[in-house]
Length: 142
Image (tube, rainbow, N blue to C red; front, side, top):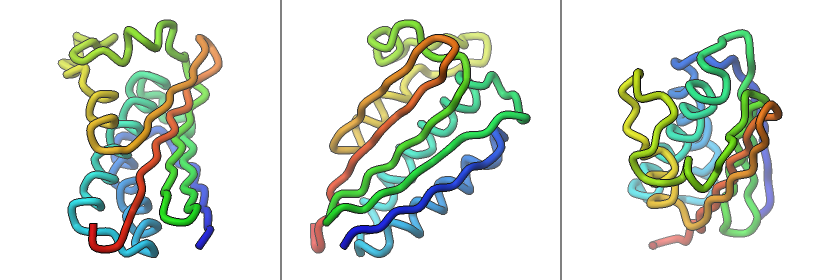
């Protein structure tokens, strides 16, 4: 089965919940377990929150783009912002690193995504935005 969907929504923190629900609904066609759905929701929450907080610095006039793709039993989720970008991706991916310590951020966003997904790639350029691509295989009875 192959399918895809794309949504674009304002960079408002309350839309993180919306993105989680969209991914769960889209993934349901693969008949995931409750644990797999929870993993997907958590990873998407981190990616979308990063886009809103870090990429756009909570500028609600900007938009987050999320694309979901099913290829066989692989679910790919792509979260993109056109915000400030990440100057050092390796540093940003280190556990406990945060560029916003004044907001009491834990610095665990990428680590959480990597823990719950089978693959996570990050591309970014300062002033051009960031794209996070995550993949998870959903197998029946897994």
